[in-house]
Image (cartoon, rainbow, N blue to C red; front, top):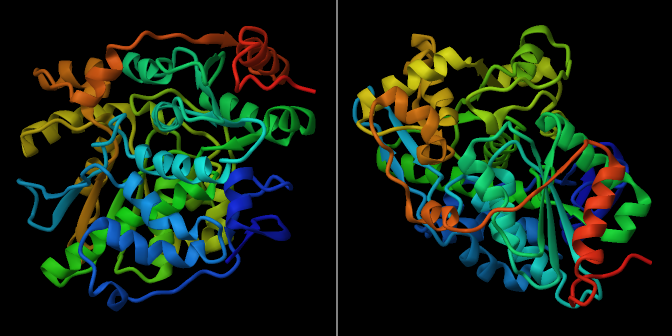
Length: 448
């Protein structure tokens, strides 16, 4: 299978798309031909790893990674992804818990998969590959954890200074020497713009051999489509019904992964994208005008995105707003509604949700009655509430137990460098960390 940029250009292999992250023309990669499948193709599979093998095989056709696909899948899906009925709902809703990985967020799946792929692709490289990642909260921690201490791999994490929770900041800044954490003055959009500018800069890109681990990398989307396939197949087997999904979304990667699974042919019904007060997607559906804007800071900080990169990929896959709003629903949830929903969730479910997950539960509670009754629903829980204890605990009047994975991260020392949002500051920070301070380290490749 070949992959093409959303902006045109020559097709490339999966291997090249994974390493480059973003196309030379600035576009995002999509398969040149979308593979098709039917639910019957999964009749003989039960586990999520088996579902992944069937679903991903066509995407790896012709890739040098194809012989390793089974092991890559085993490394990625090495923690539980439970689908649990919601106790006080109408009997037509379940919750897909995606937060049982090493950094307690759904992004552990995509980051782990990408790390497993790139480590194999880069095994014989003479110089390190540098993973450049902009994060609004959870992505950077998941990527840093996945690539931490991997030989031949370096990570640069760009996060908005002062705009992530303390526990999010800890998981962004507590890793080894091959991870450089940079607190950028500004919002997530400044981090994302800086990452894109660095990837597009020929000198920096050649010097540090950049790749991306944001959801702009096709290697993030492919494994995330697996848990939607698995959950929909399991639900259909158990109930005979095709479920809809309600998905918290910021940069649109997780929602796009579900849409990708539906387009391939999985039994997935309506898809609802729940955003926070950053209304770019909601306003696009309402006005048919795509108007990116500066992001605003919210309680659901990992979704604070004013210019979602994956909209370009979504439009390339399905079409513009007139078509998209026939295929998807969007609901925007503000901070006051998130706060009220966190209290309601704890009362209704008997357990806490995080501010991002609360956008999905709010959307479910506020669907119009006809839509709500039209399907069974799977609500996507994207992060563990203990990561947002300063928000959640005062509202619910209770302590959220810290999972073992986060407790281990909390015990690590933290370090980061504050920079301005420009290429000069980024280049200087990388030079100091990877070369000047570590001239004798084997992976400290000096720029030529």
